[in-house]
Length: 407
Image (tube, rainbow, N blue to C red; front, side, top):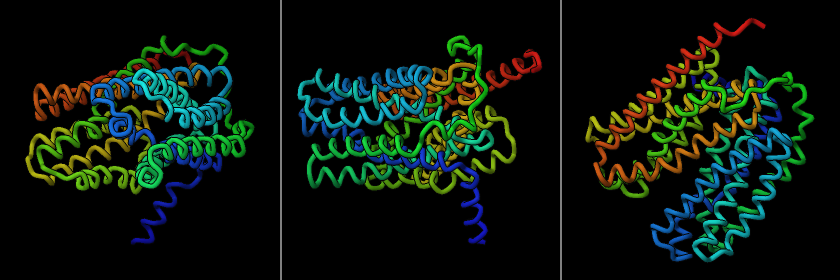
């Protein structure tokens, strides 16, 4: 029984091209090396002496830099290609991460964090297009899942290593290690992932690319993703406050509960995606189910005061995330074939950047003014709205397919 489960797990990683594995490895190094980000608030308050209000504004510039970087990355992908965009982002951000330790004024740090995030997040639309270039069409969703797995592992390893670096050499060491790891990832990309290796997967040239802003079904999809991201990020900003204030959980217990999310993703996401791919489900239908499960997780928390319901809620959230993210990414990549891929994937990245800009602060304001119960019901309502938009998208896509002339 155990050997059969093990073989099934290993088989879920089969048939992925070597280039996709290399891309995942480079992404892991990059994300594990981005250790400044989890400790940014602590650095700004403890080391630089800024108030919480000032930190809030600095984090706003963090989000704005992410939006600008995603947009710029998409433009560069369409102009110079994903390979040069990713390499330039990694190497230039390695320098900027090192330099970020030197500004001391409020506006200097705002400008520095905006610039760092703008350059670093140029990588995001480029890596999505790279997945499309290097993976077989039938394995695209699992290729996306492998990259997500690399990102999750990187974000898990990064804070642990970052805490050790701070304890031994202070925050300055953190900036230097961030810079070195970004540089290492860029050099590995130069060495191992030359675009010639993607020629066999190159799609037919689109002689009349559709502008992303004129693709109404895709814009409908983006709005639904902004809502999904808005709901999802509450689990990593406002929900931990709920754990601590309503259930008196310690930081260690909260860490274990949040860590369960990453562990379940590592253990189950790839086999789950392989299973769903094999059943040929409609990707939009799967996005609806994923979004609904995330919404249900908030409903469950409101319906019971037992601490065990928090674990059940986290399981629902994780399963919803495992379904919604990979298939939404695959939908975006497929739709991007109608136009300029960089612009399409940039808008997809920007959707989640917008969620970060408004989601954390809005969640905090709702809790402050109306309490946790009202806030969680608001998230349920937004999940229903996102599902409704996705159902509308599915109907729109179906009508589009019927009205399109045959090839």
